[in-house]
Length: 206
Image (cartoon, rainbow, N blue to C red; front, side, top):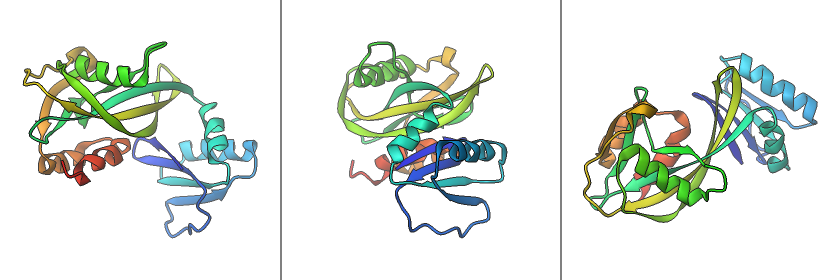
């Protein structure tokens, strides 16, 4: 299953054939061919009243690869960072709560990129990667071009007590350690594509 966010809206490509349309702001289609699929995606982009487009197919990976061809694809990596108190590292970027992340450089490993972005955006080091959490997908426009970003998320443990320093040139105005209750409040002002990632932390026993 692939869930691609368009700000607070999304396209879901899934093998689930049992979904029923119970919402006027939701559309369900069965994948037939590339041409009709591309038309459905373009219609979804234009119709902002449509909250989600559910695409049913037995070949989800193939259909997702077709979707990627409609955009400039950027691979990225980021960190779900927890300190010794069990608190989560959040940043505030352009007025919204976010997680540290950024583009993967050429020939750079995903894990390396994730740790580097945390260090650069938050001013800390001494990180150890525990495991990969998941991938997220979201779209946006940059310089008149449509972009699809795939972000690889890694759970990390922070072992130090360095002073947090926001990377202001990247639009980051605040970096903070947040408890689970504080994170739940921050989720009200967070990008939809991040909610599943942050929920991983919320439900963990950390």
